[in-house]
Length: 278
Length: 263
Image (cartoon, rainbow over all chains, first blue to last red; front, side, top):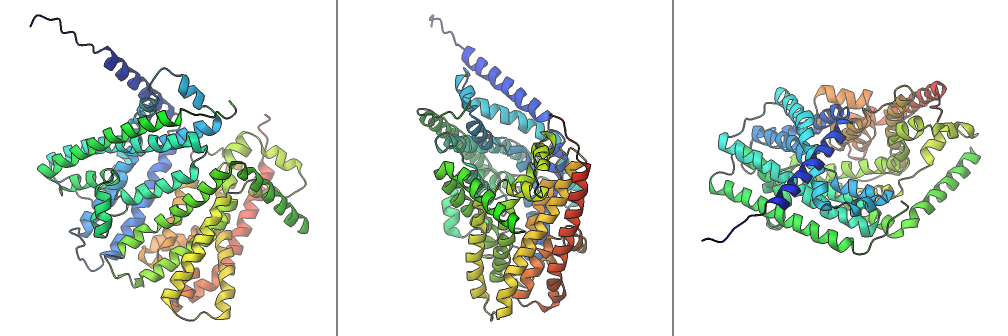
């Protein structure tokens, strides 16, 4: 083996650096609106409060439903909303706005991959929210409600990486949906429907195991439950060992698949383009 | 009054034309937000496959409550669009100057300059689901019941409008960038379930401080024959009138307090 094997890391390093720069932009942009996060904490608190009372009324006789007792379901709901404050992003809305304002042309002339630009900015925002929204919300909810701790160190670690993957799944879906704005012009109604769809089918409102069996079968082959249901099951220790590894593996698969889908949809959408105004 | 009605028609027609500039978009918005309303009920639907009743309320009764809550909400959403951006557009950018120059009521102009027409789907969806739920709940509807329905729907819309008008009027004094509106808006969800499931504090708040209970829960108790809430039901118009007067007074003071940004 005398041949000169020269690995070229340059493109990857450059891509990462660009990703890092856009992440910083997202982070700094969000800094300007930090006051909004105080009301954000209140909003999440209200959501959890509503569901606290609903579930309390449901479990008034102290029974178990699908293997969940009241304390588990309360933790399920609260952790679900806490991680939502991290993985949630507005890539689709931002893209729709760019299309309406005719600023999409700017995205097209930048010499970077548009998808990774949007995802990087959103990730910067998410890191920001982790400190200013997710952490305080978690603290407040922990103080007010008798929540459970993670089922163990392994569960917590798996949960952590699972939530990071959740972010990329949501980002992948949102970018793909956002590309629809290019041909449909304005997609605000569509985004609203998607919002409720994700809330329900991600398992944020109630565990997927509560759904009728036929619905569960359909949901099993869709990416949605890997956004909230699976991470929280990891937190609660309901997925261990092989199931844990498998869950993370499937999440990773969906990240790659959805990013590929978004990439393809972007290429298809930008083949024919109308820029409004300018 | 007659002049205002005519103007309302003109404003509405004008905005409708604006929206129809993107015809496909308008229809997609209409039907996808209709889908959103239906999916919004998915939680309760799935839940009731696991439990027979929620603190004595059956699935059909909760369905009735949810469907009813869409009616005042739909009307409110149609006209409330401008309230969300009021601080930014009218106060900070100074558009309110233009409003003051016209010889028409300021509130009238702000509310009716922009309509979220697709929110009418909430009224359509709500009525359809309400009919199904009412039939499944059973019981006889008297002529008086039919007369009460539009009255309490109107009152509900007025209550929502009043609450958000008060919150919006705050931007006459504070250039509100923090946003107290979103958390309050999220409280609308509270009203979609029987108030009795909440603790005393929240029940009190939803009745007398942010009276969303009077916009959805208390009105439905009459049609679902829960006699213990009769007194509250008859208070619905009173609460609506009271909060609307309060909102108008605060708005009026705000207008007097307005000073232009000068831009």
